[in-house]
Amino acid sequence: MKAAVLAEQGLEIQDVPQPEPKPNEVLVQVRASGLNRADLLMAAGRMHGSRGGAGTVAGLEWSGEVVEVGSEVTGIAPGDRVMCSGSGGYAEYAVADWGRTSPIPANNMSYEQAATLPVALQTIHNAVVTQGRLAKGESVLIQGASSGVGLMAMQIAKLMGAGLVIGTSTTPARRERLGEFGADLALDSSDPGWVDAVLEATDGKGVELIVDQVSAPVANQNLAATAILGRIVNVGRLGGFKGEFDFDLHALRRIDYIGVTFRTRSPEEVRQIVRDMRADLWGAVEAGELALPIDRTFALDEAADAQAHMRANAHFGKIVLTV
Image (cartoon, rainbow, N blue to C red; front, side, top):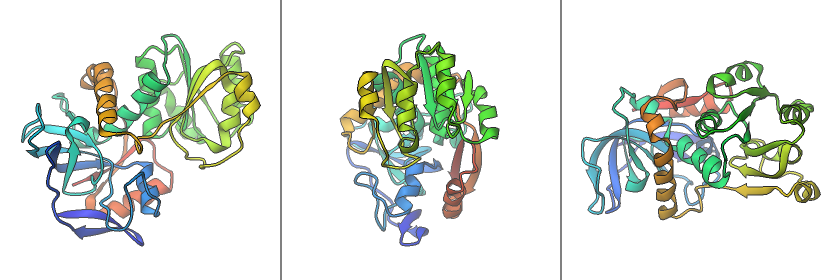
């Protein structure tokens, strides 16, 4: 089969063996695959947990039609239209754990749209609801809100009852669009005054929850913008992996600082994340209330160009490969 494979110079289209499903897996004929920032890190030579290195088929989320199911799989059958997360999605065929496979709603959702959803839905439901412990009426700040995951974060926060949703982006044109996805207030995190704006919007208290995709350059500002006994959930490190941290301010405000990743979670943990997400969000997904804009689509043969488009950071929403 044809696949986009990690090589010394980024991605190469190669012919590789078609994967065979294990007893707990589903084999899918891929129709579309969503791009994620982690794909760029792996293409640059960085491992993503146990994934990465030369010869690895790229791609963390995809959609398509079930071709075959393993002996332990129930509730999924050949011919089903599904969306999946896992590894190896930049290919004509990919396998996913049955617990990371969800049906595409029968609401005329396209394969391209379905491929944008698995990572964002799973990541953000876990960050906002499970780890972030959002309560109805609380205020939420999403750092890096114009990314696909960030846009989904604002929508899920609103759906789950947040009282005030603030999104950040350093690009004016992107900030102008954040309101379409649930932001009550859009701020520029490169503006030194953004913390004051958060405090003003929250009557001096700060927000109860920050979902942070930027990290290093905003870490201490996040602490200052968070309410006493608030929570910060560290989802991404778009601004860098290391930086200064004001431990005294962290202690003074008694903030829960929570790190999350799928890289060190067991299959059972991820299956539970998917179950929890579907219990809370699937009705909204089926109704079309949770969706992400597609910035641009590329053919599988153009996977390297698609990653270059993401690397240029000029997109809004998701980039999708079609197979």
